[in-house]
Image (tube, rainbow, N blue to C red; front, side, top):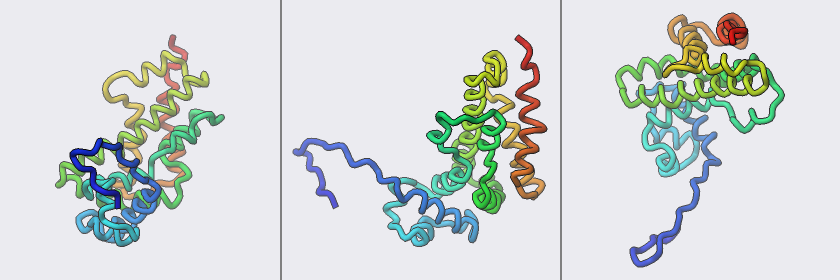
Length: 214
């Protein structure tokens, strides 16, 4: 353990937090969430499952709300570094942003999502974190997909501006909303096929509508 810095000693910048164990801890949190639900989730249980100290968890997450939302977000987030320089297409990027090819990750997301959503109604802090972290990350991934399509010439700059205008662009909400309805309301599985239907039948027609308009 590093010695305490006294008031006489010059302040030193702290060491960067080691994030190498984050994936293990988030995976452990998902396992516990899937087994006992949010109400019974504890930081102690996650620490034990991840074979980590509670202090390790609290250095990264100040509450179980933050940990639970980050765990869910880890299933849907896209590594931005892997997007740079890829030769891809608007369709492929939209599918990736919605979780296509997620396999076991998508199954885990569905398993815990319904319980998290119903619980969030009674926990304002959890609901706020859920909207900010989980939903915003997916919207940001969709926005990046549109911006890259414009840079490649697949989407006219004017059309991009029109799609992303306003405080809450519909094009960023409709895909996640349909998947949320399928998973939570209709209780149907989200498959690669259903993601392809959302992109091919809803998102791409919406994006390309008026593409010829100057």
